[in-house]
Image 1 (cartoon, rainbow, N blue to C red):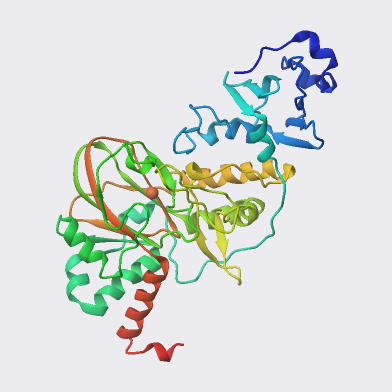
Image 2: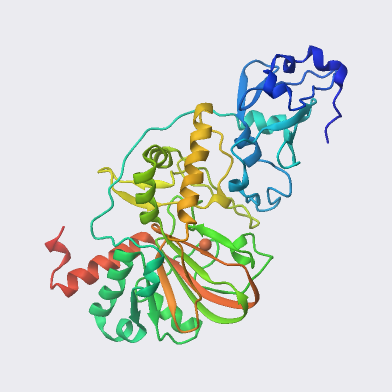
Length: 422
Ligand SMILES: [Fe+2]
């Protein structure tokens, strides 16, 4: 795509100003061209670009590697990240750069990978602003957990939900409120009965994915959720202004291998992050993450206000109330001040390390007849890769509808009315 380097131009290039240790990484120079192109120079941690119209941008090495636009690193249709952010070594730096009037080419030292960036893309994604700060506590009624929850996971029976009236609903939703999830056992293996059960909480949230869904792996859909790939722990709908509050999964049929479901308590992970790395907690509580869903024709979702919301969200009193995290759906980070890039990636790596720690991960193979409902504002979910035939049904319920149903069930089972509390 870009012209080959022209060593004769190297002495006229700003690259001759770089420090000795960078110079040893066989940095090349730009090609001489009649078109006025930006100039690139290496710094100790990134690449500075001087724009012909004036001004300078400074792009951090880890940011550049993370935002590689090539088809191996970025799905060209869904614009989802295919590249593993966490494989980037802390010492990442170019072994060679060159450029022309079209863009900048970087060859990475450690991986022998090449990234090409068009100048207009770099220009429009240059870093600009900063964001304010906040702090924690977690509401006292929350029971935090790690993998040990497997010994005694919160569970209710289909029969109690369907036949015990408000008491059955309250017990079910109380578990979701305290633990962030709850199984229901003895559910008829049918999408119709599953939908009926979901509607015991509230109406189903309609999204661009539909209402109540019943699907198998489907590569024609614009999201990795419909593939048979492994999915890291994430929350859904980070690209909506309001992510869905609850999600329900019921495995109707599975003939194959793999596909175990993963749950991780995001509040527990946040608590660990806060205790071990308060400065990283602060960063993930304040840096806004731009996100998108663009894989289905006719849709482009991005949260309002721009550029989205932090991973850790707090109320006015500082209480943690929502986790929003899906690294695959993170868009271009163009709003971080340069000095914040490295601390941000450090914080993100620490967060990911806690989520993927063996003590955090609760794995279970879902089976027909036992469904799970979880709080999408707290509990992250994922799955192992699988082969074979896997049919799953489920739905979203909005946060407000879930909270309303929980409050009403508590009022009724305590012989109170709304007017008693409002
Ligand atoms: Fe998901």
